Length: 191
Image (cartoon, rainbow, N blue to C red; front, side, top):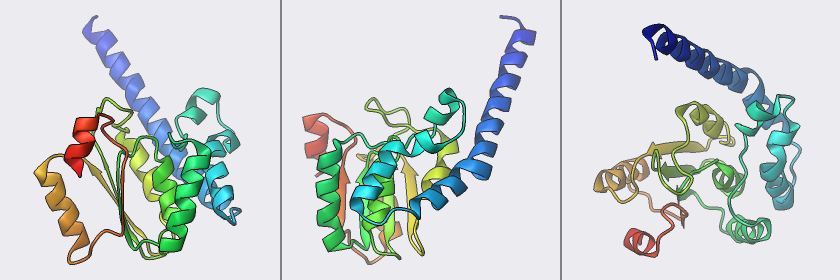
């Protein structure tokens, strides 16, 4: 590869990144907020999370980059959300953001002023490591006065725990969802 080729590929990569960010800010996030306003119950929100990307009038390859599909089985996540809707958590933590599907759904059942924290390991082996350009998309999931905190770090690192404690202040978590490292040993360690 020559310097000219390298520069060309960097330039093309930068243009693609700018195009994705512009699409996100001008089209995808406003479309998400508009469409989610048409959801009236948990079933609607679950269906929305699995199918939102299909509502985007974009080329398939670009459209698929905006999926917010949860990795869970629809019926299982719906049952969990029904339980959470009764709890109405004020502070919740998710380990494993992936495509943001459960993050979106948890925001829908949390209190309007909830603290929602999501920890994800960049480059994680189990679907983690969302690109930085998705951060504004994930932040757009917040309802009313909710505050979403996205922590891109190892959930097992003591520094990550300190960040979470700072965010919560004197508060406690109402709900913890561990869906990150999918090995038994690391999940048990996380408890």
